[in-house]
Length: 80
Image 1 (cartoon, rainbow, N blue to C red):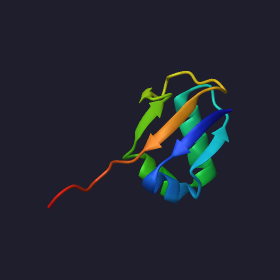
Image 2 (cartoon, one colour):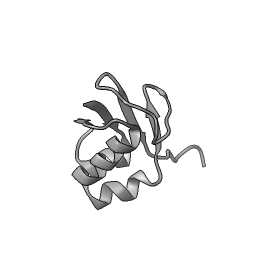
Image 3 (cartoon, helix red, strand yellow):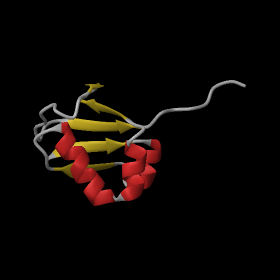
Image 4 (tube, one colour):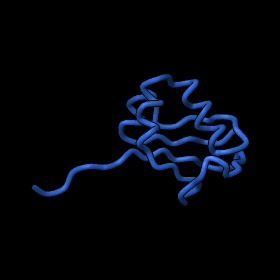
């Protein structure tokens, strides 16, 4: 089981900041997360960047139980 870390609006939609999810690829982990957390999470996921062990990830990237998949929503803010 890979660890999935969720930040900001992804964490709010899922109701947790981290979880362990089975999957052979990043895409499998994300699909299982959508199945577990539902439509609100799926909607947020569409705007997120996905990282695998600190590097930008593709859905086809393989994952192992030692890996961490991070879901990072866009950040807004700054000076006005």
